[in-house]
Structure formats: structure tokens, C-alpha cells
Amino acid sequence: LFMRQVSGLDMLEHQLKEQLQIEHVIVVSGDSDEAEEVKTELGKAAVTYLKQVLKQQSTIAVTGGSTMAAVADAMTPLNQNMECLFVPARGGLGEQVENQANTICVEMAKKAKGSYRLLYVPDPLSEESYHSIIEEPSVREVLHYIRHADIVIHGIGDALTMAERRKTPADEMKKIKNGNAVGEAFGYYFDKNGNMVHKVRTVGLQMEDVKQAERVIAVAGGKSKADAIQSYFNQGYSNVLITDEAAAMELLR
Ligand code: BG6
Image 1 (cartoon, helix red, strand yellow):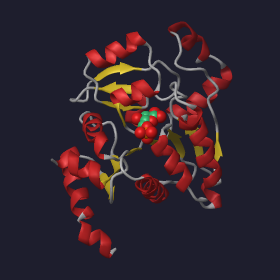
Image 2 (image 1 turned 135 degrees about the horizontal axis):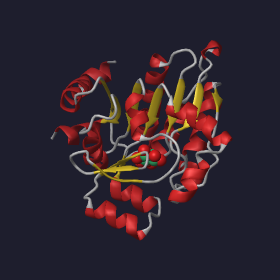
Image 3 (image 1 turned 45 degrees about the vertical axis):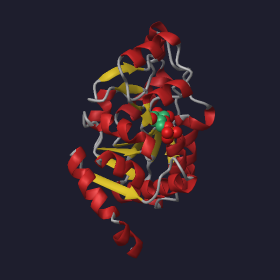
Image 4 (image 1 turned 180 degrees about the horizontal axis):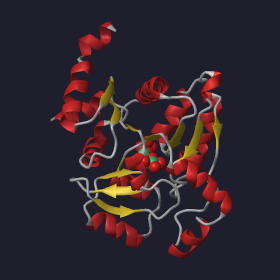
């Protein structure tokens, strides 16, 4: 508690809340670009917050990424009567297995002692496959849960870092670069004003669903993500940000 007051994290939270015009901001100390422990702290802060807002039988949609992996790592059992359901937000998005939403969803659900449903769909998808796959009964059922999630918890990435990490095909890469994308979240790429310049075609949560969720929690830290975070919040898709001191200071500059 003493540390918090001295470091002025409360002040950063307050200023950031004003700047981004959102409901709630949590800032942990340090820079997750520099130290892995800071990502661990982001994970713990996200779990603490999530537990405060979860209701009985909440459905929680989670994305992939190393930050969400830290959230899953930090998860602890929920009360038995909570009966929460965890689902992957938008499939694998071309990420490596450890970064995929399915992987993280299972771990989070197991640690929370909740249940989970997964999406077994290859992605990204061609236009044709997309339309036939979403009609598959087993996919439709999981999609229903995903699209009606009460809570969405997701990472935010630097656009080019994410596009490269996902081995994005050349034509899409061009679109992302020509559109001057700076931020990325769940397969959507945004320019600095928050306009969507590209979306990965995949099943799962679409932007309309995100807007309808009761609470959308972004977890992203590190000085290098400041522009990405700002770009994403310029359209106000999420109402909570859990970040670190370095990203917060850079955002407020
Ligand atoms: C992806 C999410 O898996 O991870 C994105 O779908 C997010 O929403 C990205 O931008 C962030 O990854 P990391 O490793 O920086 O937490």
C-alpha cells in the first residue's frame, strides 16, 4: 500500500481514465518490455479485477497472447457456485500454440475450476470455408456462447509486431502497412485514430459482439505498446484497461 502511494500509480490511473474516457484503469509498477515479472503482475491484477466483477454463470471470452497467458497463470479457483464458462474469443489467428486463445482458455478455466468450450476451426479461413464452417452445428453452439459473452478479456499488440508474429500473407501485410496500422486486438488492426484498417477473417467474436459485452477488459503493458493502446481506445471498444507504469507514462506524454 505504501509503495503504491509513493510511486503515484493512483495518479496515473486517474489521469489515464480521463484521457481514455473509460470506466476503470489499473496500473502496476514497472515496464513489461524490460522485465517478465511485470507481465506476471499484470496477470495477477487482471485476475483480482476479474474476480471482483464476475457474476454467477458469467461467460468469459479470452484472447490469446503472452499477456493473456500471464493472466491464465495467475488464475486461482473461483467459488464453486460460480459456474463460469470460459471460451476462446476468436480462434488461433495464426499464432503459435502457446499463444492461442484455445490453449489459454483451457488453462484459465482449469485453474478457475470453471468449465470451457473450445473452437476447433482452422484459421484464418477463406471466404468460402468461413461460410460453411459457421453453419456446422458443433461450431454454431460454441459460437453462440462466444457471441453472448458477458465479459471479454483481451490483449492489445503493436500492429506490425502482431502481423509479423502471425506470419501474415504479403497482400494482407500490405493492407496493414498502407493503412498505417499501429494497434491490434483480437485480429483487428487499427490506425492511430482507431479506424479499423484490416481484420483477420476467422470465426468467433466480431466487433459488434465486443460492443455488446457488459465488460471488455484490455490487458496490455510495456512502453512499446503505448501507441497501440491509444489507437485501440480511440474508438472506445473496451471499458477497462489494466496496464503498467511505463505504458501509462508514455500514454500520458
Ligand atoms: C493476441 C490477441 O493473441 O495477442 C490480441 O488476439 C493481442 O488481441 C495479442 O493484441 C497480444 O499479444 P502479447 O503477446 O503482446 O500479449
